[in-house]
Amino acid sequence: MTEKKRNWKPATQLVHEGTLRSGFGEMSEAMFLTQGYHYASAEQAEARFKGEEPGFIYSRYSNPTVDMFEKRMCALEGAEDARATASGMAAVAAAVLCGLKAGDHIVAARALFGSCRWVVETLAPKYGIACTIVDGRDIANWEKAVRPETKLFFLESPTNPTLEVVDVAAVARLANAAGARLVVDNVFATPLFQKPLELGAHVVVYSATKHIDGQGRCLGGVILSDKKWIEENLHDYFRHTGPSMSPFNAWVLLKGLETLPLRIRQQTESAGRIADVLADHSRVARVIYPGRADHPQAEIVRKQMSGGSTLICFDIEGGKRSAFAFQNALEIVLMSNNLGDAKSLITHPATTTHKNLTDEARAELGIGPGTVRLSVGLEDTGDLIDDIVQALDRA
Ligand SMILES: *Cc1c(COP(=O)(O)O)cnc(C)c1O
Image 1 (tube, rainbow, N blue to C red):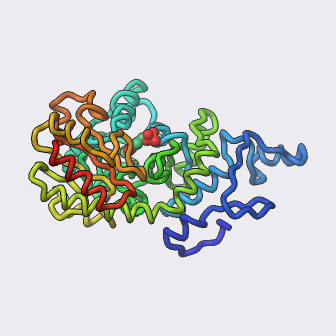
Image 2 (image 1 turned 120 degrees about the vertical axis):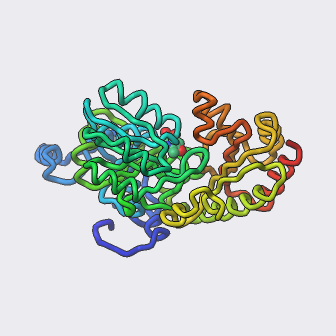
């Protein structure tokens, strides 16, 4: 089923690509909850271990349900190969660290998901891998940070939580010139609205926990790149350290992929309407939304993204007091640091996801005491607008 080259559009790929059917001809993707695999003969076991016969050996290495998820993600992303992981952070850590050794150097954008920043800034240096953190919005900062031993560039775009964007193609050109790899964390853009590999990036990572599940159930992650890079950098690491995705989670995420375009389209359309309402509200000091013409880097958004975002970042007049009052007054939108769920979620970064940063570091990232991040879900747009407006009026 997966061998033929086809020109399917994403919505078709997300329903059919990668499906492996067992002898029962089941319609829905099967959940292969098995640790090991049975060999018909000693010769077959030998051939599998030698890599002379295709097939499964052990679920830490690979599993049919996980394989379906990886193949479907490859088709969507236009990647040659993929490895699915137990969480988004397992994917980021492997994508960043597996290609490096002591003495190498990383250049990373400063606006990163908190744990991603810990991996490059705190974990990597423990093993002799240096890291320079830059304001990724200005390409000159990337260029200045490059050293002869620079081997990896790392960024996310749009960023968490202030939805800044980084010019992926420009950073990719610098990475190529420096002989380094560019790894892009594409969670906020989703695989539908931004194609880092087409923009010149070498490796793409996702937390599948977010939009790919989309219904708040399972953790998961995936790394996508060319076959050679995965073979040389990830293959042995995955076999021998075991960050593998569980088949149960792969099954849930496969079913999530079927409805991904419908959900993302609806959530983005809702987010665009809510962003406009927020921008017109007297209690809102600032709205950052990648679909609006007043986004600080609207030009780059237009150049590299084919859609807006399911997330909105905004500042409420009156600082922390008003931001707390606003959150507490919401009736439909729930407080949670997660995102990409069918349920609309609100976060106050300064006191939760970004509480460990100094006031100064937060200010650099554009996170103030009145900043909140809204992840727009699948509820009725009118109901969401009513809820947000009544909460702002009470804040
Ligand atoms: C959530 C997230 C991660 C980490 O993913 P987990 O599945 O929670 O481990 C990494 N990067 C970004 C941008 C995220 O939003």
